[in-house]
Length: 304
Image 1 (cartoon, rainbow, N blue to C red):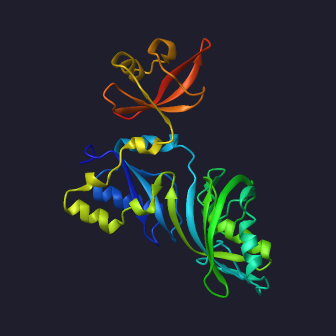
Image 2 (image 1 turned 90 degrees about the vertical axis):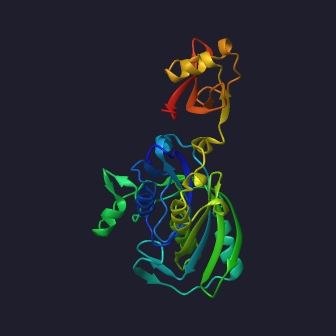
Image 3 (image 1 turned 45 degrees about the vertical axis):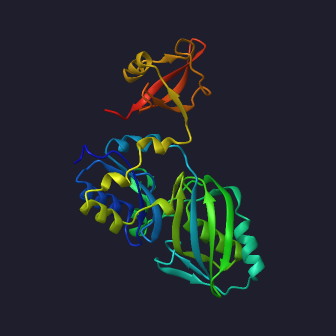
């Protein structure tokens, strides 16, 4: 069965599952060790988690930096060690801001800024995960990273101290830290109380399957209906179709000169999707410069 499926399963991760838990569950359902994911979700977070199955796992280190959209809940007036409500409360403060001031503070984070990753994260420092160090009571200095919050919408007050909002953010943005930073800006602290990833790149929640649904499809021997083609991971890249002679060269790792193959290629260093004469996706390619001419060269094969 391990050779039967290759592609992407868009999973709606349940609350309480780590991303690794979800991968292990899919491994058992698909009877293959060749399973991975495209971006960690916190255990308390739900929503879109693209799962790579079969040969698609080769794509993990080549994925396009996609924006992600979330629906987040935050509780104001508290600070926790994990920056969410699953952690230990470190401090409590009165909320003195008006609703208008809360909305203004939330929206003030739109655009580029630098964010310090939380200690409770899977990032590694000197080979050690920050979360492992945090559990030992060790805090280390973390370098602030450039992030971008493209937009924030549907800001809504749920109760005296709880709000929710939706945000479209760049890869590497921690919503927990965003919530904590909003709380700091308001002077009362804040902690994330809920999170749902509603999209990751072109994968959306309305097209995601729960684990229960995946198990049902497995029982009915219909898992193939859930799998999207591997090329869907690279939908934003230009598609290049090669004639038989040149697709053979590309499969052998040879550069294809644009003039000889009569190709119109994007800029040097851009990546492209490579298709054979039958329209079958077979590799991820990259545009390079050889002797002053644009060429395309395969950098990862997906049909072997």
